[in-house]
Image (spheres, rainbow, N blue to C red):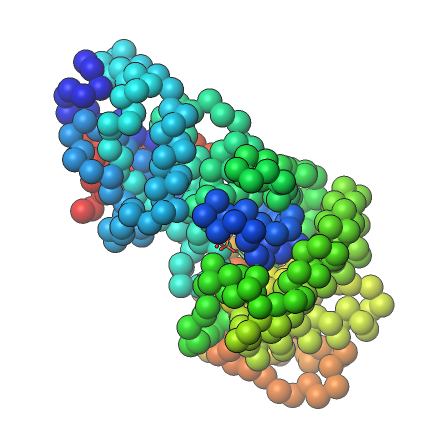
Length: 420
Ligand code: DP6
């Protein structure tokens, strides 16, 4: 059966993790190609806790390209989606499934329309890099469907054209986005520094901070910073190049002390650039500042960093501990200040819930009985309701194919999202 005939639907499903930058990307030198002004480094989070799952399907019966995100149809007309689709289609290779009688020649892919269904296993509204996981997953899964032979580095440079930070979600563990030098962006891609097993003691706790404020998107925020912030130029040219080298060294040697100092300093400088932008951008709020202060006081009282913090373009805190013991202590301090609003502790901490047991927190009574952290001078203030919930996670792997058709988001007969 030729590609243009018949009613067959060919599908692929993949899952991609999200990532959190420890050396931030902030500022583009080319808006259309999404080329950054500096290198960045991230950690990939466990896809069991934070990831996007995407099913892509092609069929000669589809009259147009369509996409559904978390069950709702969205437009694919944006330049970023179009770039990813175009770049993958260009690299598509011949495909044959004799059993199903499907043969697609290289040139046929141009004329076959796609249906894409994607969903995030964490609330998009939580303000956690959902576009990074989403575009990485789209590019990875389209690549599988269209039999693309290019390596992950090349795929990362396509995902970059969907959302800059997405290029780093093509790998697990520790990932560097090399800014590249070329005008066409072909050398602006992600490389893996170390996989997730290299330093697997790290525990990541995310405080999803309640916020009513409408945030400035990363895209428009960084555009304003490039245009108006003198600090951004200094950061990109002078600070980040040496910081990236030090961070690579810290990761290689599993040197938590340096890793934490660099991570906190870089987050703070990124937010300083935001303040240096005209008009200034405020991503962090009072709760974010309280969490920084809590960690800084603890780190100072011990003489060495116990925990690292980093904040993206929003108020959520990402806290990285060197091991479970420290993570459990951190959780005690966090829950002392930010107790849950209702009595249900198990929905207040999602992801790896076993950390609650490590912290001796089995019920709300245990939270109420927590002692004030000794390093704080005025211990009696608490901020119930200021954190929506916590996620406990760890480092995770890169994108994976999901072979089980039951887990596909598109119905293999109708070619539409299941349940539509
Ligand atoms: C603060 O990748 O979301 O999270 O490339 O315009 O889509 P676009 O921006 P995006 O920016 C992420 C910014 C950041 C830092 C980082 O992830 O490195």
